[in-house]
Length: 254
Ligand code: NAD
Image (cartoon, rainbow, N blue to C red; front, side):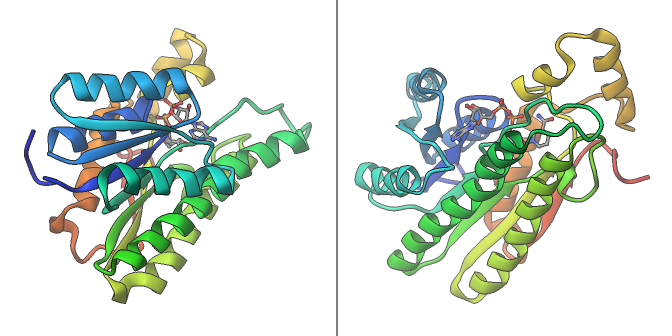
């Protein structure tokens, strides 16, 4: 396969499902070699198999983004397989159900921050170290959410984690802007993925309300978010630094 990302090496965390899978496939279709980092071995292996069967190039590296040694291994495996690293999409995230009112569970709070916030921190740490070693820049997109810019009702821990991702993205972006490393965030509105299924549990009235809340009248498909992420990693976005790009069908425009 060939395209705008010919020969580039891209890590996609959470690449076995939803937005990550769509992004991994889109990079492969544009000629990139893709490293699927997943905690679900089943989904990760399947994603790599699908991309390779379609004529692309992908490997799966079993990864827990909340653990430093696991993320260090991910970057080492990517370099061992493909010789370098050019792009990283730090997308793995969780949005577990939370108890109503103030009956919040401390362990759930820690788990959300561990994956959504510390996970992105650890990924950037090892990815940037590799970029600096190579000495010719790099591109990072951290997948936050509109919850990184405005609050989601009854989801204080998730909202905090995503605000943290946006803040951390800006801080890191400033630090590395003059070394050719462009770091940005992606802030999707509702996306039709297994995380959303977990929230609506097939309740059609809930699904319809979600779609209706978006001025465009539907929640996005993962491929629509992947298209934005690829743009952020492309040469066309050369002047984009520390930007939380919103793709939400107009949800927070009003
Ligand atoms: P998804 O559940 O389809 O995909 C998330 C993937 O991350 C899964 O494959 C999961 O196995 C993986 N993962 C979870 N914990 C991990 C860990 N510790 N280490 C490695 N991999 C891990 O969900 P999605 O909707 O594609 O979510 C992707 C990202 O987009 C998340 O960060 C999510 O918060 C964000 N997001 C989603 C929506 C939405 O409506 N779906 C909206 C805004 C932002």
